[in-house]
Length: 364
Ligand code: G3I
Image (cartoon, rainbow, N blue to C red; front, side, top):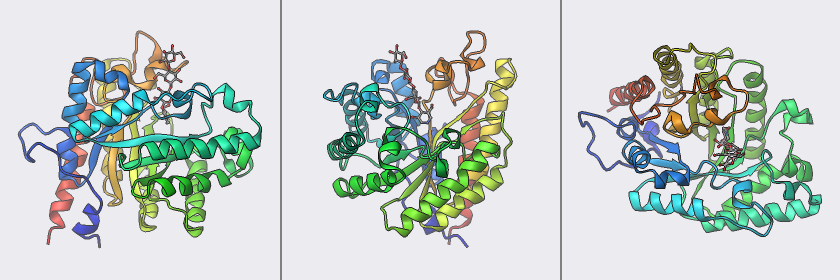
């Protein structure tokens, strides 16, 4: 039996607007459901008043998108570019928003200069990077994606690990090493392991789910400081799905005392009908179907989309994606190119309201 207290534990801080306003924002709907709603943001949004207004109104949390990625922070070994991330953190503080840091360690997108170093030098850079970046933002972040996407079986490494400089220099030990180092300099931030694909019931999702669960078990057994699991949830209608099964899977992490973050939510619409109205309806339907299952899991504490407006979605820049074409630009998010609400926003609000109603029923 789930208690109301368990449902709310660690959940959203309040939003500025009064609850129950006639026109709910996603942030308000989420707060009523005991959740945080947010979105990834690029520092360029601060030069885009209309987009910024949407973030201010609809979200309670900013995720740093590319600003804190290794290759963006460190285009060269001796160049540190903290400006975009500093800007996001300062704006969030001024506006009363929370910030999720994404991501300290990722084997993808490593800069060329890093790949040229010896294993010993890579280990030195790893420690130095984590210490410097985590200390700079200590106390300022709600959570850190300490390690992003540890698994990618298509890289054909034993254990299904994603290959890249950190993995090839240290093997699987890099994961625990990263979590322990961040905890040492920022003891309050929620340390998150973020993974992709687990939402789908195709070969990729099915292969990565047990790998992630096994890693979490080993980290917990070793006493490593892991507080949350991020499930990216870039929904892909081209793959089979069973969202009730996904909900059972993530509930398993909740049973181990971990929080669950739906961390990069959007819908790949490249296989959906061409007509924008039909596409928007299909995107909304899939988003709603997913969230109605996922948000029934009490351990879910937040939902963050990957950007807020279709115009700035990563799918628009994805080579080879049909949605990259001018004729069928991708429409994967709750707001359109002109920042108007789409059916997906209503579907998200509906799922939030369902969770809020469940919460009310649990009231003593
Ligand atoms: O802005 C530059 C532009 O100036 C330059 O001319 C152009 C040439 O390549 O690149 C542009 O930068 C691109 C950038 O996105 C724009 O935001 C980079 O090439 C491109 O690699 C980068 O992709 C990002 C990708 O991660 C790799 O870091 C996407 O924005 C970002 O949305 C995506 O986010 C990932 C998460 O971190 C992990 N989960 C999946 C998610 C989506 O792929």
